[in-house]
Amino acid sequence: MPIYEFVCQNCHRKSSFLVRDISSSFTPKCSFCGSTKLARAVSSFAYHKSLQTVWEESGEPTMHPSEDYYKRPENIGRWTEKKFQQMGQELPTKVKEEIQAAREGVMPEPLKDL
Image (tube, rainbow, N blue to C red):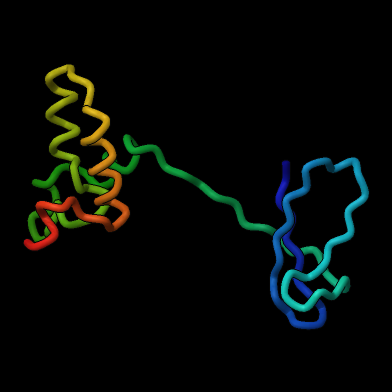
C-alpha cells in the first residue's frame, strides 16, 4: 500500500495519503485547507537500521574515549545486551522494555534522580 504525497497549490503545504488499492480512482484533498488543487510531490523514503548495524557503526566504548559513550541513546543498555549475548542467555522481556524506553528518552525509575 503506497503512500503518496501532494503539495497544495493554494496553501503550499504537503499532505500524505495512504492508498489501499492503486487500481481504484483517487482524488486527493488538502488536509489543511480542503483544496483539490494538488500537485504530486517526490516522496522521500525511510531507511531503518538494524540494532546490529547501529552497534557496528558506533563501535566499542574504547573507540570513543572523548565521548560519554553510554549517554548516547542508541548505546543505553548495550553493555547489558552484550553480556547476555556472551552468556548465551535471552534478555528478559522486562529488561528489553526498560532499555528500549531509555533509548526513547524514558529513564527507568531508579535512575531518574541521578
